[in-house]
Image (cartoon, rainbow over all chains, first blue to last red; front, top):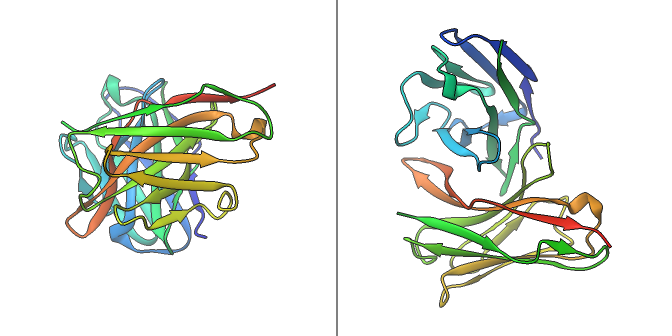
Length: 108
Length: 121
């Protein structure tokens, strides 16, 4: 089973700043099966990025995903107030989905 | 508009069985999507439980496989989760979600609002 490790655990930034979130896999992940979600308190997760780099419907272009193999990155180019949330990466391999433990982006 | 809605008891006794149902509207369970259960202990991260396809094919989290059954009822357009021998560690918000293919990839694009299940005597 592939383990996903996200870093940092918490990212303290100000609105307008750039956020860079990392997701590292214990084994190589098929890039088309690496996904990112955003979750706000009291809400279900929301699909942001699929296939490592494709934005889901309605997701602003300040969100971008990149990476391959074992290292993937979610970048938020300029943080808006509504972007402060927890972000999870997810991968599919050997008929099993796994999630990373999450990165919290908080207001500094 | 696709909507998913979880339902079931909010309290289950230790060693008992947790049973939840997810009613789907706006899409057919016979579509080319997989239907999933995900849980989240209070204040913690997401854990995938398992998935079912319209033909009845299932995949489960290896850590839960011995206790989990996910089934599908296409006549009612709903799918269900059964988790046996529950303990306090199974206390969580349980979400159902649709996994759909986008281009050559997949993602959970629609989620239920989640339902809190507490395991306690």
